[in-house]
Length: 139
Length: 258
Image (tube, rainbow over all chains, first blue to last red; front, top):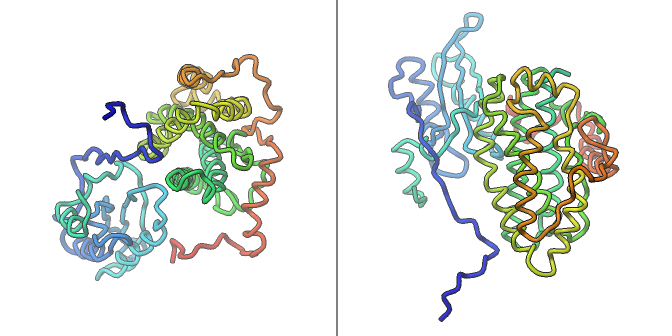
C-alpha cells in the first residue's frame, strides 16, 4: 500500500467556516413593545426563500426604527444579506418592506441595506439554528 | 468627478467587467466543479460590483447611467478585466483571476480604514468573500504549471501581465484619494506589494515573470477610459438586449420598490 499523499483532485475546497459572532447580535426585537413589537412580529412571518427559517431568526434584521413623516407613522428596517451576490435580494427587500408596512399602526415602511457588521452563521438565533437543523443542515 | 466617485467607479467597473467575462466559461470550463466555481466567483464579483454601484446611486447616480446607458469610454476598469478569452484557453482565466484577486485583496485591505464610512463599512463583507477566489486560482495554477500545460500558463502570463499593470494606473484624483484618507495606501505602494507577492510565487511554479520595468505597456490603460477593441465588443453585447427592448428604465423581474 502506498503512503504517498493523494494527488490533488478537481474538488479541493471543502472547508466551511462559521465566522465570528458579534456581541449585540442577533437582533430579534425581544424587548420591543407597541408598534415596534408589531413590526418585529410581522417580519418574523417573512421566510428565507431557500430555507424554512424566518428572516428574523436568520439574523438578517439589524434594527427597526419607528418615526413620523408628515403625521404618518413610518418604519425603517435596517437589514443585511448573507451574501453580497444574493439572487433573492430584491425579493427579500420587497417582502420585508411590505411586511413592515402591514403591521398595525404603520403607514409606510422603508428598508435600508447595510453590510456591517458582516452576517455570519453566528448571527442565527437559537430558535433559527433549531429550524435549520430540522431542515437537515448541520449547524 | 470627485475622488470618492473615482475610487468607486474603479472598484465597481473592475468587478462588473471581470464577472461579465468569467460568465463566458459557463458550461465550457474543464470540469463541472471548475464550471460551478468560476460561475460562483462571477456571482461574487457581480455582488461586489452591485454593492459599489449602490453607493454611487446613493451619491446621486442613476442605475441606467451607471451601466446600461453609460458610454463604453466612460468605464474605468483595468484592461486586464476586459480582454476576450481565446477559445478553450483555461490557463487564461486562472492566471487572470490570480493576478486580479491578489491585487483586489491588497486594494480592499487599504480601504478597511477608509475615511469614507460608507466604503469602510462594506469592505469587510467583500474581503470575507474573496479568499476562496485566490485559493481557487492558486490550486489550478499549481496543477497547470506541472507538465506540458505550463507553456499555456506562461503564454497567458506573458499576455496578461502588461494589462495587469493597469490595475495600478493612477487616475486623475489619485493624490486626493490618498491625502484625504479614502484609501490608506497609494497605488504605487500597492503595486510594489503586489510584485512582492506575485513574482516569487509565480517563479516558484517554474514560470518566468516579465521584468516590470521592461514590460512593453499597451497604449490603452483602461483607467482613463481608453480600452482595447475587446471592451467595445463586450459593451455592445451586454447592452444590446437593453437597447432592443427599449425600456425607459432598467427593468427588474420584481422591483425593490414594488
